[in-house]
Length: 99
Image (cartoon, rainbow, N blue to C red; front, side, top):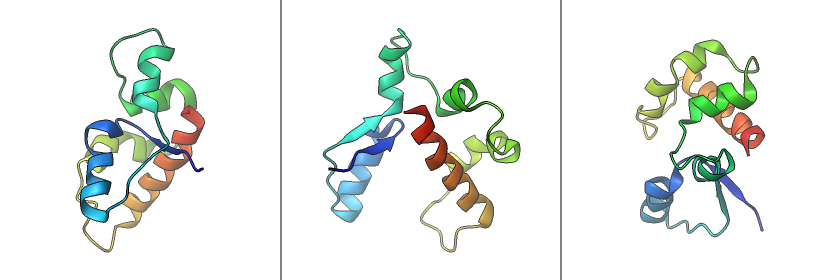
């Protein structure tokens, strides 16, 4: 079984995958939910805060500084610009390190 690593996916991503693509997820590790309890806090942390905490000095600062813009971008638009592809690659790479 393959475990999917996502951040804050329970409110939208899992629903979107099921609705738009018919993809049902069984094994998901949600870094946002995990850090609520792992850090002893009952509040969620933004992914950018986790990037800084666990991956400081490892990521592209230009992408990090524009992270919020990319999160709210239209990911359905094609072709994706190179900077968005780079952001997605960073996001996936560092998500594994955080988990």
